[in-house]
Length: 204
Image (tube, rainbow, N blue to C red; front, side):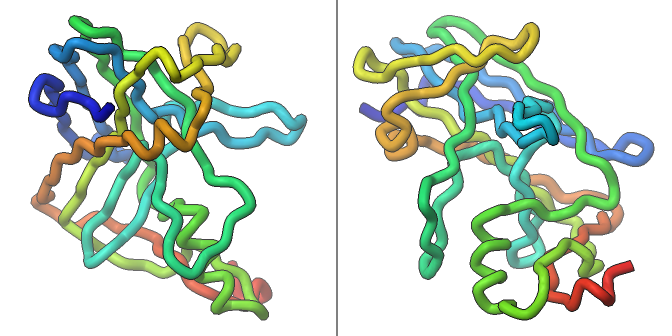
């Protein structure tokens, strides 16, 4: 029950504007079924509620490539998790399109809870924080999507004007996930703050 990739159009562009990296992507669903986009990554607020800021994304630096992901992340080998993190979903109906724009402040800080957790296992006496200064010219933007079928239940999340949903069962949606990606090469290097294990007394 996988998404019809050939009939799903994906376009994306990036640009540096002032002190941020701006990303804009569009899906056009020409397939014969609705789809769910894993594009909403909630973050906790001090009062226990969640923020649904569109700027939230998973960010990593791998082999000198800056990866910006709105996907259900794969759990790395060697890391045990109590519960898999599954983003919330925007529904893209068949015959319709969806565009999202978001920006990431410069310098860009990596943000991957699984990678940080794995590094933390190797850093029992310190803290893993994004302070290691690196640069890259290469960017890859990836968005996860899956086919919606009658066995998938959508539970609406109240968050202002956006129509977003939790999915059930989440594991089925993650297994069906197709990842759409586009790569870019910048003219000038971009500064990235990567994870580093440090004594918190040294962080300034």
